[in-house]
Image (cartoon, rainbow, N blue to C red):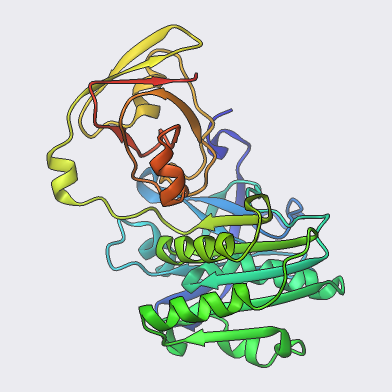
Length: 329
């Protein structure tokens, strides 16, 4: 299976938009033909096809009552290559094509207690989860980290929510204070076998939350993560990229990957396809086992510890430092 853009596309129209925080705009999308939109589950995202061939993924923050539209929130990135800026330029009535919702970050149906941690724009899938769990009468607590209240989308909505007692906002903390607060959040009570932890946000927050959770007794299988963006690749990294060979162990095929080319793109030329979605190294769809080679990790999905093992990689964005890479493909 390839990217979700291979699936049937849906034409939607912008019904409304709201400025939710500094640089964050929420957009309500309805079916352009007036038909009912495909169903979704909390944690799901859609792929939005934009001018110039760009495709970007945005999580739905819909609640159970939002059945006639898809609701997304878009943070305007200063270094936008056209994705977030294009969506911020949309006007009411504009149409765009999207994929059907796909969920790589679902709720654990067997969990009895849910702890949700969001950082910045990572609140979007977490908000959908929170709304669904509250509606179902589940045991849920939400922790929301942001650099300041003015940058925290949906802060007012959360503060006024009937279940505000289950919501804890941690705004304006420096690095040391964030680390302390995260430890307090995750080490504050015993972890049961039916507990589930969900984390979404920037890579540093993901790393911190995962490390603190593991150190506090959370089993790795109870930690669910979705990152919003891979770490930035420096100009120096780009300038020093070299060609390398990839050997696909199971198929017996091999190809060369040129500077500036992804493994996924190079493999496609010899008939090897990967399951992909974000193609930016943060969704985990293309996670691949590595048999041999020194990996240049550039993703935001694997933890530092997982990257250090050197047995898995994201071929949509990561590369190889050695001359040859052997993949279990």
